[in-house]
Image (cartoon, rainbow, N blue to C red; front, side):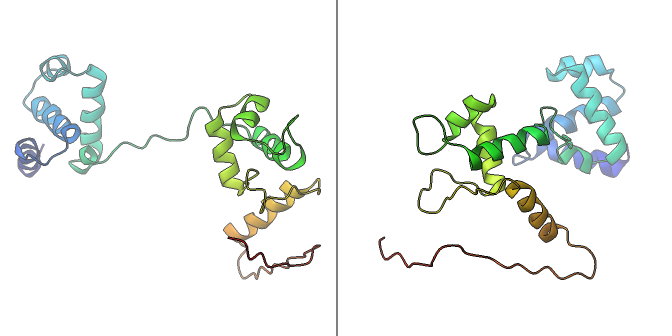
Length: 180
């Protein structure tokens, strides 16, 4: 540890506005730089040995900035398969629950065996709002999700030197609704 790094960490420990998690990380590195063993550092700071090892490693790899930033978590281990997402979207667009006019987050979650939060995230990602009767219409196109995915993919990641045109075909007359 350089003298400059040590001064920075000591200043963080003394400062009143330093977040406690950052101050703990600074204390870990300061005690370790003084020659204290990992187990002793953990015991003195009332934390775990893996925590001490983690922040010593982060300091060694990234310096002082490695202590002030959160470690990247990576992708979720409980990721839903694309097939399951597709099934939920298809069920939302193509079916109705028994005895109801539209799906709710809870009824869809029970029918698909996932959490209501998962259904809400999927509906939000696909712009689905089956509870909004005035604006939501079920598409009868069996390939709707496939087409939607292709179109959105073109907008999000267009090929080089390309132009994306969109033509919206309406099957019903447009009507202005003056109700508020």
